[in-house]
Amino acid sequence: MLDIGAGPGYFTRAMVKMVGEHGQVIAVDIQDEMLRILKEKAEKEGILSRIRVHKAEPETLALTEYGQINFALAFYVVHEVPDARKLFEEISNLLAPGGKVLIVEPKFHVSADEFNKSVEIARSVGLSVLENRKIFLSRAVVMQKEKKNEIIISSGILCHLTAFNKKTFFIITILQGYSCFYVSDNNVSVKPDKAG
Image (cartoon, rainbow, N blue to C red; front, side):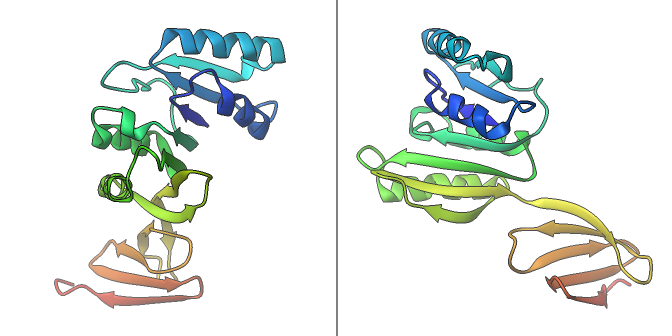
């Protein structure tokens, strides 16, 4: 899990409880003082060993060494960064396929139009809206990185599956000149490409 703009660790410490004794939470902030306070609180609670504290740079999260994550929290952060597109690109690159990000912005500071623009930017970098959430005095959405899998259909043709959400319409590109449209869990139809 990743807590972007962790501040003194209010959500980080709660996330540690969610990941269990073997999980890790990466707490990212640009302010040294906030990270120091987070460390002190986590040390007192005996959970510091499950938190990786990371100082972001002014223009980037700089999280190249951590691998893929399953969940990211961006709570009251997007409106603070100079380049929302770059932030969402970094989040998308960090998320494992199917990974989720909860984006929460303050209603008193971010208009509905501004929030919707942020959601559109996130969509443009490969995240899709999974659900809108109601959070007090906030605008919130859960977004998901598309899943990419491979499946073998009965004829042995290899398919690459891109799932945009858990309900409907998956587009599959099949090698060997076929296109396959996967409409539900139980129905796969296969058609030759024009070239095939």
